[in-house]
Length: 282
Image (cartoon, rainbow, N blue to C red):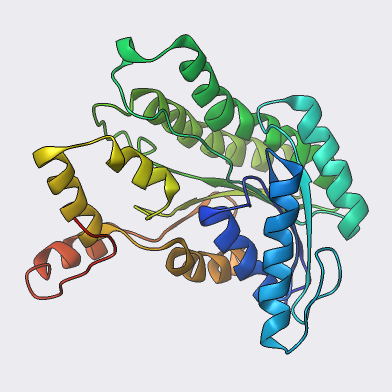
C-alpha cells in the first residue's frame, strides 16, 4: 500500500540520507531533504525526482509531483537552532506538515587521537552528531506536537559502547545519541505525547564517510580494515531498502531497527571464506 506520510531527512544529499529519501519516495511519501548547501540540496532533490520520474518515462523537476511522491530541499546547519526552526517551517510549507523526522546528518572526525584533534574538529563533531539531533528533536516536537508523528535517530560507531582508536570524538557523540533517543522515548511516554521515538542502526556502510577514514590508513591497518569492510560492509541502498519499510511499519515507541545484528555478523564471518564479498577493493 502506498504511503502518504511527509518525511524530513537531515543530511539527505548523499549516503544513507539520500538512500532513505529514495526509499521513502518509492513508498509514496513526500520527502524534504536538507544539506549544508542549498545548491547541493536542490541538485540532490532534482536527482531523486528525475530518477523516479525516469522509471515512469518522464522527467520531473524537484518540488513537483513524481509518480511515487514529491521531493523538496532546504539548507542549514543541524547544529544551529535557528536553522532547525527554519527548515521545519519550510518543510511544513512545502508538504503541509511533517509526520516523520529523521535525524541523519553527521560528520566524522577524520581520524586522529584526542590529543591530535583540533578544538574546532571536536566542536564540529559534537555539535553536528549530538547537539544537532537534540536541537532537531526539539524542532520536530514543535512541528509535530499537535498531529503526532515519528522522530528517528541514526546510530553509529560508539552507540553500543564499542571503542576504536581514532574515533573518540565521533564515538562519544554517538554514545550520547544512544542515551538521548532512549531518554526521549521515556519522556514522550511519560508525557502522553502523540510523538514516538525510535532509532535505526545501519551497520557499516560504504560511503564517503567510511572511505575517507580508510584513505587515511596504510599498510596492514588498511588491509585489515578493508577485509572487515568487505565482510560486514554494505551499500546505503541495500541498508535503506531494509530500514524504510520497517520504519513505516513501526508502531511501538522506543523501537530500535538494526540492519547488522549479531546473528548476521556471525554468519558473515563464518561464511567469509566461501562467500567472497567485494564491496571495496584493496
